[in-house]
View 1 (cartoon, one colour):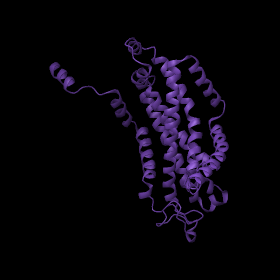
View 2: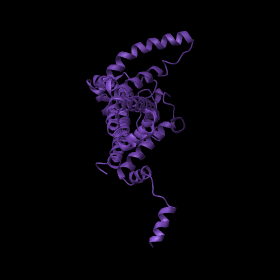
View 3: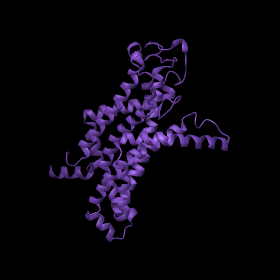
View 4: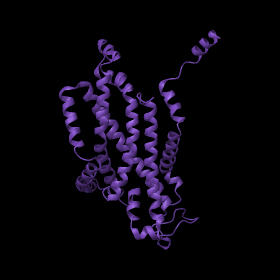
Length: 319
């Protein structure tokens, strides 16, 4: 029996930590629910062109403000556009904005600056942390609104000048400026927390024995950060990115709702909420407001559940 167990352990090697974490994650009901909702919503938005029954800007004034029907499952808006189609295309907009802002803000800026600040210390650490404290002095959403509202007019002027210089049209109309401004504002909002988290992890890990051994062997700073520090700092980073996805997704909706985010004709859940938020419309045509609000609530709730489940698994103090 002992020999058989030994042979089994040799033939079937033990599972790696990431595989074990994935298996534990899939056994958690809240993680499964969160993943299912996120995949369904964002997957639908990603393939909106093939899934949506109508185009996001197809108008039919004869069918304006109609309730749910077999032809329009969630009804139509004030100019006869299909609400289901607009929700699906709005999810695509939210996915693009959220993924890009998290990638540029949290992962590129936050992760990179946190690694550099924690590893090199000294003046580099002081400068990066002081800049981060300036951003932290403002409430996060207020900072995003301030950046978007003040930067957008200048970017619009530059884009019009660029269109005239290159002889092209459509960059402003199809929302390129809106995307650019929202990306920048949300990236500025998201990098500080990630940089502080990664810096703390680096300060702990760079005193470990395997980092000291790498230094003794003459490994470069880039190699140590990439191969020894970053992989061991990933668990809290993954949790924070997951939590941040819900916050960024909600911030995109708020910016569009305030009128300084994604602008029509590009579809956005925030625009749909703003168009249907009137008390009179809510009483007479609740289908204008309920679908986008429900989708936003589900999306943020799902990201929160998934982040909480990941924290249960990857946080050594809990697991």
